[in-house]
Image (cartoon, rainbow, N blue to C red; front, side, top):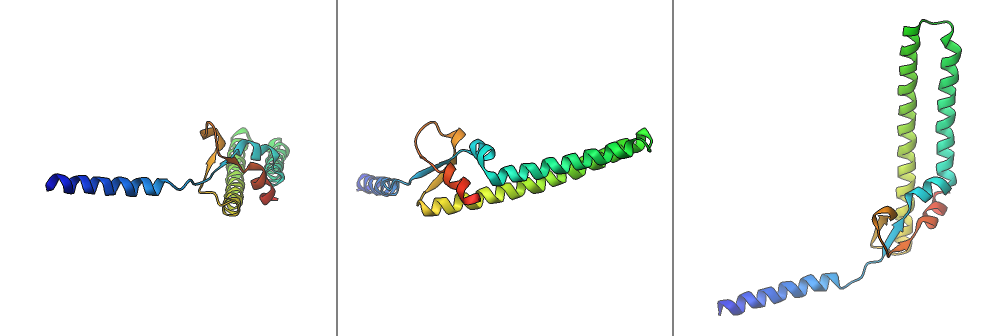
Length: 136
């Protein structure tokens, strides 16, 4: 009697497990490298960052002649800190924009999961171009 109960429990568990796996969720693939090079919005963020870096660098060069080496070092460190802060803010905006676009495309295409392309050997639906379009 005990063996039958264990066998029945095992069969029910297996049926539930296999039943839950039978639905095939569609997998979306997102190529972050392609998005970074082709997205106009991301290019805009990169241009903003480059402009900020040039502005800080030009300002330092103008001030360099009238200050001591020690003061220049301090200002250089402050400028670098300011640049990094701006970079982090822009990166957060890029990440949020990409995440929002991926969420929208995943819902539209009824995708169960979206993975980064560099971690998928084969298969899946490439949604990179759709995400880039959503970001514009």
